[in-house]
Amino acid sequence: MGSILVEDGLLITMDGRRRVIRNGSVMIEDGRIIDVGPADAIGGRYAPETKMDARGKLVLPGLVDTHIHLAQAMIRGCADDLSLVEWLQHRVWPLQGNYSAEDGRISSELCMLEMIKSGTTTFLESGLHTRYGFDGVAEALQKSGMRGVLSKMVMDGSGYGTKSGILHEGMVEDGDACLKEFRAMSSKWNGSAGGRVGVWLAARSLGAVSKELYEEIGRLGREYKTGVTMHLCEVQEDLAYAKKNHGCTPVEFADRVGLLGPNVVFAHMVWAGDGDIRLLASSGSNVAHCPASNSKLASGIAKVYEMLREGVNVGLGCDGAPCNNTYDMVREMRLACLFQKARLLDPGALPATSALEMATLNGAKALGMQDQIGSIEAGKKADIILVDALTPHSTPSYDPVSSFVYSGTGGDVSSVIVDGKIVMEERVVKTMDEDRILREAATNGRRVMERAGIKVAPSWSGREGA
Image (cartoon, rainbow, N blue to C red):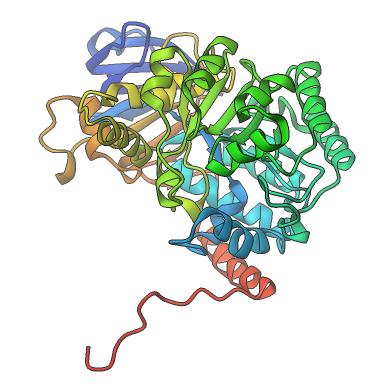
């Protein structure tokens, strides 16, 4: 793999002591970090093959997105300003239900390209339908150089919450077929690309999965020693469904079917109550907080402050392009902080330092990778980003963490290293053909719209005399 010296930057290490090292350097060899410290001390110890000048830049661990939809990148902007059920039933599901495997691959490439260019090095895909072409998505992930978990969607129904039969016909799958595909894809792809590719199970939301299949998903996760992810308590509809059908809360139902534990990541948890939060904490379950999506769809604001206080491991997720509309984790950190402050009328409710922990260390823990990524420490995988700190919107900077979280954007990320390889350098992605991806995504996005019979008109088309 070679050796790289990232030299003379401002290091935000996220190590156990949360060291911030001005004029610091990181030495990388064979994919791992072997030394971290002051530049003048490290510079003379090694003869690296490559040197990266980090002067005027922040050096941080790569960001970890714990909830994304790869297939939704290509339908960005298709359903703005709609409520969740209308958003799903009349726009997102019909579009995704008309996808081909080629569309799935192109959308995934577009999503990965955006993540790389905004500093995300690791992600958890929240559920791949068989029509998206698992093999093509996995191949795209391998070539991108990113680290990612691809989850196979599992379902045996067509409802959503208390509403039955509303799922688009192109999105319905057979339960046995889902499990068969998971086994095949796990055997083929899990641990591939030197461990950069993982395969998990994704349980579809309440109303689309039988109790027996949920139990089987939990059992398979334990048998395969892999993870499970699921949307839960995203909307009040989840509460109504669980109470009507099982006489309990959604989290209590997840406990009954064996879907709580350290290998599970629950997305959203907007409507988790205090008892639910205690249950999540005691079971070691993880939560992916998605502030942009939850606010845009008017789902509500999750009790992140309370979750963290009770010991729940909470990461961050960008969700999908139709409900965010970006895959920019830097923006997501800022929103996470602002929403908790506004919700609790407390400016100290979620400081910038907590948001950065959520986007790095907590995300790594949620994916079971806390010993490998999430901080810049000797022995860990070399997943590192360089961020331009000399910009009009971040100057002057008195606290680099606060400046990054509150003033930064993903567009400030200049270079990205994953697994000890330079994936992007000075905004040029080395592992992907950016021009081709943008061209194909625009073309295929229009074709999917046509096949689905959906037209999205401009909000304003001009007024006479204006």
